[in-house]
Image (cartoon, rainbow, N blue to C red; front, top):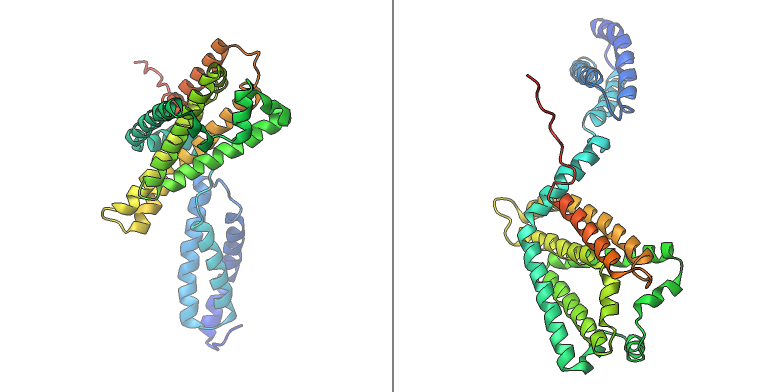
Length: 330
């Protein structure tokens, strides 16, 4: 049974062997408890303490024996079960949606507003540049787009010919996610990448509006963007602000190391990126099913755009899922 011939040690092992079998069964059951109750958790912790105590005794009485090896294996399995990461269940998802997303958005609110102002200023600059120097539109538009506008055709209402709305929404969603991730990742470059992304997109938006306006199609382009544009542009500014916050953590880590400050900031901003992806999913559906259809009137588009933007703001400010407190009856 072991390397020791001490009869007292062998007797002690035989005495506790049934208890070890019971603890081994408890160890196997603990690994499958995704949502253990308080009773199950206390029983698992009690088993862990007992196993650790018995393992120390067996190592002292019978080092290198089979009982010691078996107890070490069982204790290691139980240690893994006790220290495993918390299961991300329904309660955690609700807490993230209700609390973590608004909290993360609040930490980058000021930066987001500055980036939104940069976007508006860049759009104005793009409008002025293309209005004054129309040939500059070749820097932001393809030859096919320019030729179509010059012949009185907007490219926006032709995208329905590329495929069904569901497939189109998927393509738009993936493209929006890539642009948003680029704004987020470029923000880590001391914030300069985020400023470049926002300024470039603003210049492109303003320049295209000016170019289409020169050919009598400005209202058509504006009509196309009314339903999905407000949330789409807001999410881009939000992602760029989050990336800038990561860059700031690298520059000014405070009392932490740079890697630790970056890890903590990324964990705090993770829920915000998930919210951006969900918001972009809604924008993609709107852009695929509603925006390309010319028969939908401008008031309807304005209602959809403002309604979806208001929904986003209520969520990011914590007012959408605010819990109502029941009055206390005395």
